[in-house]
Structures are given as C-alpha cells and as structure tokens.
Amino acid sequence: MSRTGRVRDRMRPGAVAVAWHDSAEAALTRMRDAGVDAIPVINDQRVIGLLERDAALACGRGGNWLGSVRVASLMRRGVFVCRADDALRRALATMDRLEVDQLAVLDDAGRVVGVIGRDGDDDPMRRLVPAFYGAY
Image (tube, rainbow, N blue to C red; front, top):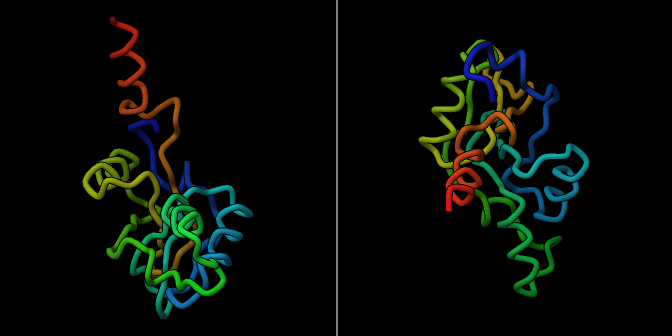
C-alpha cells in the first residue's frame, strides 16, 4: 500500500459486511463473492468487529456445521474501521496497531461503503520476510 494518497483512492467500494447474527457459512460465502479474507461485522449499521476467513474455516475443520455457527462467536470484537478521507498511511498504521490486514471504510454517516486491505506488493511488512531470508 502506498503511503501517499487517500483511502478512497485505494479502497474496494461496496457495502461488504455481515450481521453479528448471520451464520459463518453465509459469511464465508459473502467473503468468497467479494474476494476478501476478512469481513466487517455490523450491528444496527455500526461496525462491531471483524470476521476473518481463517477463523471460520478452522471452526469448520473442527467438525462444526457452519450453518449453525453464528458470526458473533467467531469474530474479533472491536472497531476495525477507517474513513474514506483518511490518509493511506493512517489506515496502514491502524491495521498495524490492530494486527489486521483489512479495515471497513466508512462514509461521513458511519455506514460501510467499502473495504481496504494491505496490498501484498506494496506493504513493507510483506516485503520484509523475503528480504530477510534472502540475505542468508
């Protein structure tokens, strides 16, 4: 992710989110359709958490039928958001602080209008590991 510019210039537009009471199966389907690895969780149009694909898949591998597992039981609780007008460097700093690779993007009214994730090639942390091992 470039450190210059605004979130609105790099976000994936669309109100991609799931409700806390949705099933993990429905959330995985929505993630797959949107091409994301994590999805914001909302309650009354406000972001209350983030569901990561790995958490849902691990639950399924544990023998659980994902149609009966609620998103609320798997999500990371917290406000994983940024604003469309935020600087990209601020969004990256927020991802680093919260230890996530994606944030919900909110409009001025607090509604989800998109998502922004780390870009693999431009993210300095993703370049660090191959550079480290390449030095040995």
